[in-house]
Amino acid sequence: MQILDSIADAVGNTPMIRLSRINRESQHTLLAKCEFMNPGGSVKDRIAFYMVEQAKKEGRLKPGQLIVEATGGNTGIGLALAAKLKGHKLITVMTEKVGKEKVHMMQVLGAETLVVPGGKLIDDPDHFINQGRRIAKEQNAWYVDQFENHHNLDAHYKFTGPEIWKQTDGTVDVLVAGIGTGGTLCGAGKYLKEQKPSIKLVLADPVGSMLSDWQKGTEPHPAPYLVEGIGGDFIAGNFNMEMIDHSIQVSDQCSIETAHQLLDKEAIFGGSSSGCVLAAAMQFCEQMKDSALTVVAVLPDTGRLYMDTIFDQAWLASRLKT
Image 1 (cartoon, rainbow, N blue to C red):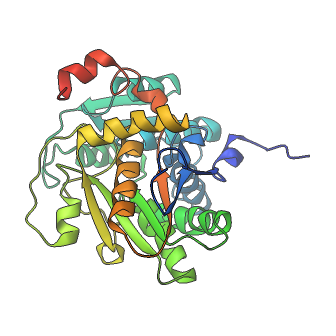
Image 2 (tube, rainbow, N blue to C red):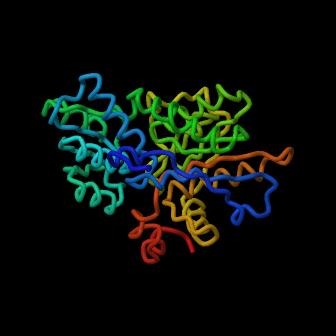
């Protein structure tokens, strides 16, 4: 019998799906690593449960102690599940950019949520990460610190990377993912490059983020963007820039249109960041004209938390060009 002991054991081992309908014209094999099928609906469940587990093992998280984290949304949802399972209260700090559905989900799962103004630089005391650190210190809480916590990288190195290697029988040539903290692409990418040094890591980055410009060595042009959870205006401690082989910038419109195409053609319901990653993967396939490649796109989150945004016609009409 395959009966799990808890919801924590349902994290990971997400399916790999061949995208043969949306990728019909390409010579390359395009595969989707379906991270939206984790219990909380995103890839962040992996790091949330793992970081909590490791903190408890190492004695940094005491029984019943408050947990605090600054989040782009999905990590907060994963942490809310992990906190409830392990008997902890959780406070999440996020900017007003995070969709209301994600905030509501955290609240339903028992988290106390604090939404603060965005647009602050990382050295500003009012930056949402600095506010999270301050609250944790004031309340003697454990601050998760997903951007710097090395267990974030470890979770993807130990589990996500080996899963991709096994699911593709080692045929993977390219891994495409977005970067919020750097954990997915750099953690899984490190494992895959150890198995097969020729594997290329491709950063999918929203237009307006500064990460792709930094990777390319060009002048950044920061601007607001609609895609949630990936991109940024600072380099997280878990982001190893030297590991990245290519970066592709994707506009909001292209990201959202690709998320809709993914649903229409493959019946796969992904969010805006999934659209961004898939669009970058498809652009990379178009650029590679030589030998056929196996390209894995990590689709990080579900479309179910975007019903009021990218899957709402009124919202789209007010924000995107027609």
